[in-house]
Length: 397
Ligand SMILES: Cc1cc2nc3c(=O)[nH]c(=O)nc-3n(C[C@H](O)[C@H](O)[C@H](O)COP(=O)(O)OP(=O)(O)OC[C@H]3O[C@@H](n4cnc5c(N)ncnc54)[C@H](O)[C@@H]3O)c2cc1C
Image 1 (tube, protein in one colour):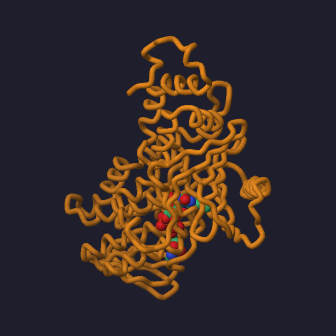
Image 2: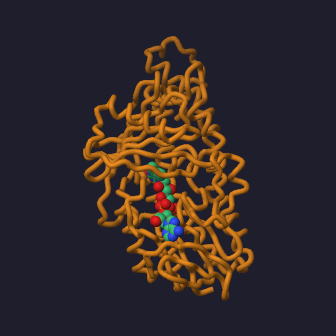
Image 3: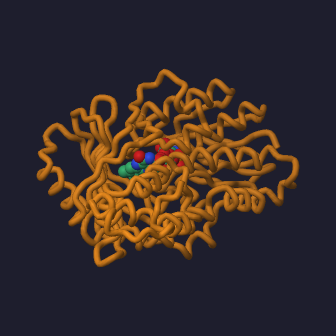
């Protein structure tokens, strides 16, 4: 297998192109826009840059954020210090960085829209806005609005969130995350170089209503919409049942990133999974362990073992996180209150933000910590003397 066509040049496509070209394959990447300001917060977690250090070690402008203010209705606010900063890029810059790396590795870029692909020759024939091309293998990286209906995840309405917002001129040092009543989603304010990305994502609510919620929030916080640029996009957020039938690969092709639905169904984090799935797809393609006909199954297995089982479990938790209740209050309110009052619970939240704490295992850790967290909370209310001297209630070392 020599010629690989990469359809789409966002983070997933660009990283796959870099990996395959540097292994010596003939790689042609097609993107209708190449580097562009894709609607996105642009936030990269510790999980992403610890595995792919080039995301830190470059001269592209970026922000390092170490403070997040979490807010929830009837829960107030809390400042969470991030031991591992969130790194925030403008998407134009991040896409350009990744595309430049692909070119340096030897990939050929073509600014063209892929109109269709069909079997032909020794593999595939592509119709593009620039003409035609042939390839032995295709990597589908066309994002959440993948127009190639026979390749990649078949997103149903229950598998998506609307995401929209404004780029607002301005400056702030922290991230804001605000939960909202009866919304499976949240509002964010991400500081970027020279502006803020203020946005909302939500499942099962029309975009127009989400926009109203966001604009109300901006008015309450005196965040001006004058001179702000509106953006909106689709965010994959697969329902639990959809993960098992997720069409991530077939004979002669693999889908990566949003085109494969690989986004955290709770946080909406997709950049890490775009890069990671591209990495796994490239490894599968280059590996001699799997015969060409077995590549699709091998890639599916690798994804599942690496992170897909965790995201599937996350999709089970999503409704509880946003809409559930605990100790007679909403889960978001309790999360904010517990973070404020319990250092132990705050440590769990820090690990969730950094991507150190997978969803599989979260419940066990929370239950194991529950007594300690409740102890912390009681102490924060000055009730230490009233507590029994039970070993269970003493903080674990
Ligand atoms: C509002 C919003 C905020 C977000 N915030 C964050 C965040 O802070 N952190 C995070 O980790 N994730 C975030 N995400 C998710 C993240 O943006 C995506 O998961 C990520 O961009 C996926 O990368 P990708 O390469 O798979 O797809 P994309 O980045 O969408 O790239 C797809 C590329 O394919 C090209 N393309 C599409 N169709 C064709 C075609 N037919 N022919 C040629 N080219 C084509 C497009 O031009 C595009 O460049 C956010 C998403 C949204 C919508």
